Length: 455
Image 1 (cartoon, rainbow, N blue to C red):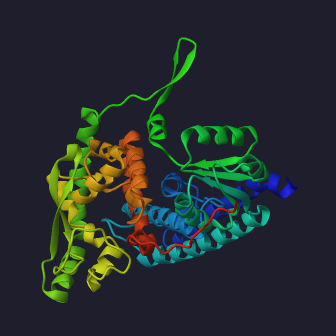
Image 2: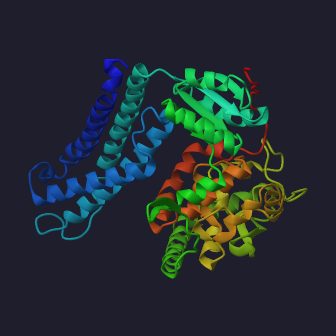
Image 3: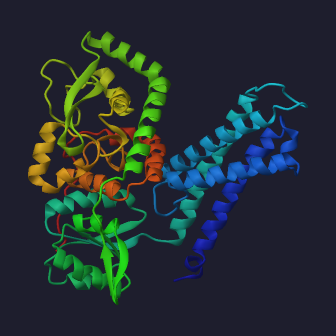
């Protein structure tokens, strides 16, 4: 390990610190042209500074932060930009409120929106430059990790490899092996990182222990047992360390708070997106004169059925209850854009208000898919322990073509980790879906490059 690698954490920390100082400084220096007191020491300045810093740190944490070296540049820029814009909006509103006094305004005035726009534009430029600069520095110090992938079949290999190859700066896959390969341990010894995917449990444990004892980074797929342990706690039975995974439903207080939040957010959502829904309805009607809304039976908590409301995005003729595919001819021209920006989901605020759904929860699947997925994965029924939701891990992280098992794991991760704070975080993170619209709405298809075992 060279000197730069030893000092990389300090280097990245300094880059991040300078970026945050510039973001704060931009806000205060530009707004000082309107509020001169903002750059002088005072209690009001202190309150404004604390508000900005606390909001920025909290929102950056929620959206993903300055994850240099771990994420690609676009999601880093997206997360930092969203956090900073929301911080600017709230802090600017606070400034306008504090400017209502005997020396300035005798009533509330939303002042200097043009300065706010200028601040945001400069901050976005800072975020863009420091993200790419930080990535350049990090990957200049750290070369791609030498990796091997161990799976049980070429089908599994072709499932995981397209995901890994999206991160070429992080991972350099040199070997792709079947878990029964006679020299699998020799290959792992030569690698920095080992991906273990769809390998029988007994072998996975052996490979993981080998990686641990030889200081190798290891990535494995979540299984049902991992989900249960995730929600568990360490306990001691006398001198015996154990993991306690207690299976329980939401408490009365949790259900009450969740329902109250659902009502408040659905009402706010209907009011806020009302104009968008009216425009969408008009465009759908104008295109082919058909029905504006689409109703479909979905399953929610306990397998109870309800009619989900969506804007119609497919032609009414020859429309079937099948998941959309790449370049699906059933999708209308208007529907393509409604699906891209998830506008077709907005009528579900009415489902939430009625109590059919929750704002956050597993996505309620089509009845046909529930039967199909449950036959393939009996554990799929576990996601019916809570109400179906408009958003959640599977909607934020996943795509339309995410595999049923991965969707199930994402949904069960939410159920096992549930808290009101988690709901709030996922609601705030939902807006990031709009910034990956091109692939998050991609239908089911099979156009990936094919990979084969190297040995």
